[in-house]
Length: 182
Image (tube, rainbow, N blue to C red):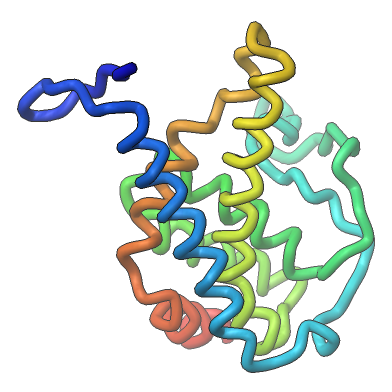
């Protein structure tokens, strides 16, 4: 079985090759978190978080100002920094300069609700974990509800972002963000 992919040679890439590549991307990001666990999570603040901050869940007034936030189905009690990580994961998708765009968001976030340096340390890993969770849940849900296109709406852009982030040094994000977040 093969799937079509648009590329320079317009060749068909076997589905097995695509699955293997995706599996390697997931393992890379999961192992990165496991290997970087230098500081314990117990020092991170916890709170009730929205856990799904994205442009589909924000309602704006006609003048572009914030009217409200919707979709509270993913609310959980978890690490406070995870709420910022979820937003930043969405911001990075379909974005030519994801790290820079995430930095702009972080600067605004810091102006309203400052994160601690240790929380910023975990931000990059939490972004990657959220993206991994997103594609994993998407793959599972589409086997249950194959006709529901909404469940895979961001799957392609999420895989592209995960692949892009795999090529970057996650420690450099922390240094970049911490320098600009103060």
